[in-house]
Length: 131
Image (cartoon, rainbow, N blue to C red; front, side):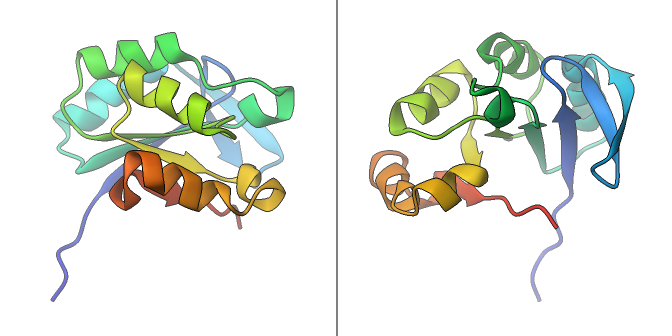
């Protein structure tokens, strides 16, 4: 039997953690680094950080936010938001992410998955799908 894993998700709108209501309404929650600390203390197996505005705005998830999260958090961190090149993925990993997740970039560039896997390894790539 497969072991169950608990993955805590932090959705951000830039550097503010938010709660999504059916992808149409967003309620503010606070600082992502504080939420990550709570998730870590509660014993989650992994944390998924998603910046929903990064791709829309043509930017990259905040590297400073990643650094703040990993400073006090032991759980592995997967980061998603604006990662559409190998260079962007490397910057996110250098900031402290254990894995990267890509979403809309796969639609624009399907070969990005294999490009990232060849540099970071297959275990470090996640494809996120909104439904």
